[in-house]
Structure formats: structure tokens, C-alpha cells
Amino acid sequence: MFRKFYPKNYAESTYDINYQKLYQNGYRGIIFDIDNTLVEHGADANKKAIELFEQLKNIGFKACLISNNNEERVTRFNTDIKMPYIYNGKKPSSKNYIKAMEMMETNIDNTVFIGDQLFTDIYGANRIGMMNYAVKPISPKEEIQIVIKRKLEKIVYHFYFKHKKKNIVLIGFMGSGKTSVAKALAQKLDFNFLDTDLLIEEGEKTTINEIFSNKGPDYFRQLETDLLIELNSNIKKTVLSTGGGIILKKKNVKILKQTGKIIYLDASVETIIKRLDGDDTRPLLADENKEAKIQEILNDRISIYKNAADFTIDTNNKTIADIINIIIKQGGVS
Ligand code: S3P
Image (cartoon, rainbow, N blue to C red; front, side, top):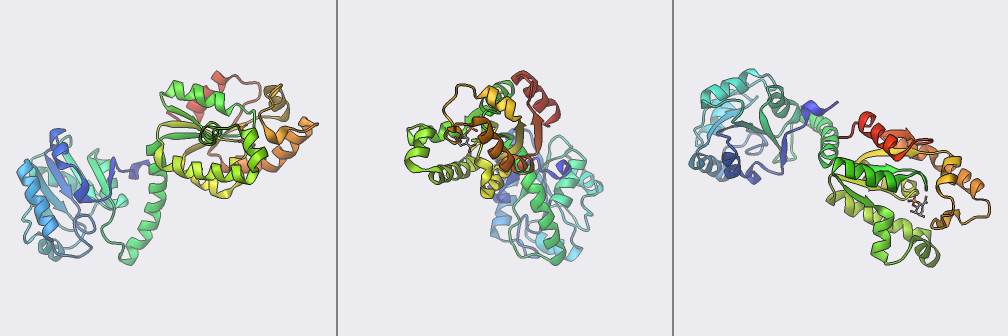
């Protein structure tokens, strides 16, 4: 839905971009937005900005400024920079992106746009298929109409970063097939496979059963949260299988939503019983009447699973291959 606003690249600052590498990759022209991309909103060019344009010239780049701001603002900024410029640029309209390329004598394949606003700078570049970088705005102080846009940008960025990480998170009840499906899906997509239970067992050098009986469920749940925080900032292109109770903490669901696309593997009590036949590795199911216990826990959790998920699959009477095909075809995973 938001893809047209997704930048091709993201950098913390205009001054962090590796321009030498861009040149090596065949780019010859760079179009810059000014306010909050090169300097704070409304500010004159500073030493850093002047040096950047010197550096670009030395590398061999042509550059051009496009601002939606007025002539006074743009020419004032350009006093010491002395680059071709366009004011009242009306981004995201394509017209001035094209004009800037004409001014630099570059083309759509060797020009990059750098700007801080998704709905003007980046959307405009995407519309004409121009390579682009979104940069973090230099100053948090903004005009009121921009403050509102920033709130919307935050939503787009949330989905953008998730999409960029490409992780897939499987949630579901014990025995719903998360680990087997995750392993097979990771292989098919050439992704990494990780499993929270296995990582916790490795970290604690003991089994889940032992952790529950020696340290208690609260201790285990804290290990899950600590692990999710760590994984969230470190994994990409990973299929992550999670422990069945991970969704019990709202905080965990919030982290998982940032980590990747959440897929719920739904299974009936009968299916779960069949799949867990002879398995005694689940401390929560060490009950005389397993069926009643499964039903009771599932009743408590089913709406949490469904609400947390981006996509739910009914796994009853389906093979692992069936489930993977559904995830790939209908789950929007690639
Ligand atoms: C649990 C599920 C288990 C494991 C622990 C608690 C649960 O993981 O994390 O025994 O609360 O549902 P699996 O779902 O992989 O069995």
C-alpha cells in the first residue's frame, strides 16, 4: 500500500552516504533537496555543505538543487555552493526532476535523488524511476504542516523497515508445526532459520522443561522478551519460529510486529493432539487430561494469535509443502 513512498535506500545523514561508491557504480548526477537534507530548515550553507559539494566535484559528479521553497531561500543557500538550482520545485511532480537531469546532462539511469521527505522528494523520484536516498531530517524542529507529514512518514517507515528486513515470524500453539514449517520455508526462500525455544535452550544450556521447573515460567517469559529485543535489531531474511506463549506479553507482540511479517499457524485441538503424540517436551501440557488442557489454553490464546498475525493459515489436514505454498502464494512472502 505504501510502497510508492518507500525509498530505494535510507541513510542517517546526507553526509554518511558513500559518494565514491555511487560514482564507481556508474552514477554521475545527484539532485539534492535542501531543507533538512543539507542544512537545517531555512539555514544558510555551512562548512559541511560547502565541503560536500567540493568533494562531489572532485569525484566527478554533477549536482543540482531542487527545493519546493522560494527563490530567496534557494539562492541564499546557493551563494557559496554555486550549483544549478530549481526553486518552487513542486515535488513530487516529475517535471523538475527531468529539468534537473537536463541541467546536469545526466539521465534516469545515472542520476540519484537525495532528500528527507517521503511524500515529496522520494515519491517524486520513485514516480519517474530514479534511484534515491531518504535521509533522516537534520533537525527535529519543523513547520506545523510538516509535523503532520512526519507522523504519516513514521507509519510508512514502520512498514518500510519491516519490508526491508524481510523476516517472517511464525506464531501458533505448541504442535502447530512452527519449527518444521519454518525450517522448510527458510530453505525454500534461502533465508536463515531461527527458533526462539532452541535459542533459549542454547543460551541457558538446558531444556525448556528444566527452565520451567527450576526457574519458573516468569523467568522463561523474560528470556523470551530479552531474546526478541536482541533478534529485532539483528536479524534479516530470517524465518523465526517462536514459542507458543510468546504472544502472551503485549510487549513481545509489539516487537515481533517490527521484526517481520507475522504468520499464525492455526490448528485444531485434534490436530495438535495428533502432532504432539508421545511428546513430553512441553511443560504446560504435562497434565493428566491433555486434551482438556490444550482446549483451555487455546481458548485463552486464540484471539491473541489472530490479532497479532498479519496472515492466518488453517493448517489442519495440510502437509508442510501445502502450508509453505500458501504462505508464498497468499501470504505476500517472497
Ligand atoms: C510454550 C510453548 C513452547 C515453549 C514453552 C511454552 C507455550 O514452544 O516455548 O514450552 O506457552 O505455549 P512451542 O510452541 O514451540 O512448543
